[in-house]
Length: 164
Image (cartoon, rainbow, N blue to C red; front, side):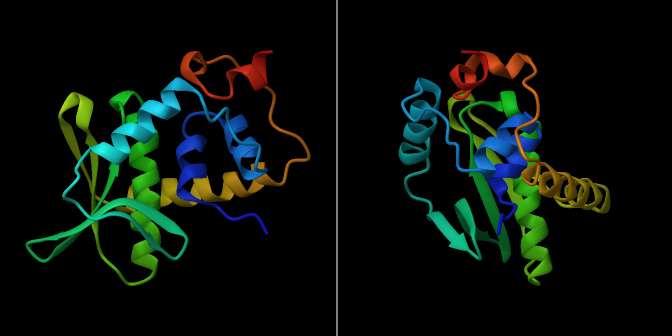
């Protein structure tokens, strides 16, 4: 059975075609330099933090307790995808809330020395629930949505797949 993940939520807010491809285990070109930079930043940044914590199928980049508050953080290489990163993190916060765990989020962009706070509210919950519904629909399409050239295609690891 196909399951909605944080990665699919991330892709949903960038490109619906990527949602279908990833859900059907058609992975992007792994030697893509932009993916390699992201992996390097993830491995080398915030070395003193607890990283790669997995809870109920969710994998958090960082999880910490500060002043009695649970903080879940995602490390991103750029703020270029801030909306999709925010919604991915909100998806995690939403899932945790459903499990009875209240947390707040942070998006960390080490190359830009930026940190964005993320708090789940009712408006975002509705947006997440709509995204989950549509992701489930996309996952069950018999073929991927038609390709559409958008400004994110320039650095996409799926570019050769879509435009070869």
